[in-house]
Image 1 (cartoon, helix red, strand yellow):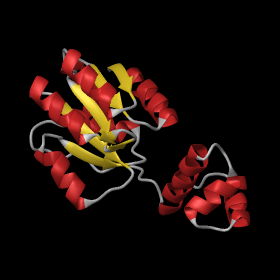
Image 2 (cartoon, rainbow, N blue to C red; image 1 turned 120 degrees about the horizontal axis):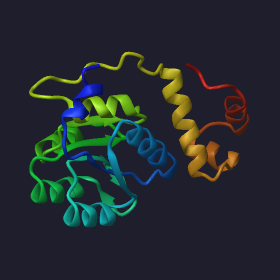
Image 3 (cartoon, rainbow, N blue to C red; image 1 turned 90 degrees about the vertical axis):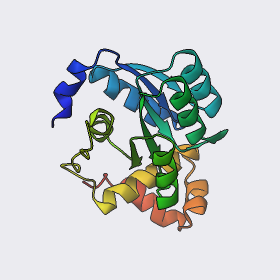
Image 4 (tube, one colour; image 1 turned 45 degrees about the horizontal axis):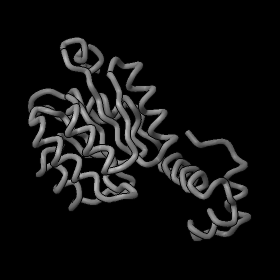
Length: 184
């Protein structure tokens, strides 16, 4: 983990976090503050563009799909205002086309959700042409599925029937999954 001490060499530790998943945004903001970043958050393209214009940060983590538009718009504004900013794009809907678009407009990396704070920190602080190391403990497929189900469940205000409908699964199957502990 080369990146743990790399932040000590950085003078401007300002970090912009933009995501419309509020629980995820709060957890990530706390985790990044513990790693030494000075975090500012927003939950929309409008908020991200306003912050990027008024106080362009040295680092940014931007969700691709936001309720009011595309996170790549924020990356473009940030690139105009601060060309040296290091931007990582996050998404729950990974696709090669969007990854290419993100990198073309200036993002340094593209990570799929759920990304952990260590992976994000490593991507933000990677130097030169070195790619960040792969995660030491990647989530299992079962864990990724469980996290996705939990996220949809929260977005449906913990309504089992609505969550089951959106996930296209039987309500009782979903109830059994929710009753179990999270897989490792």
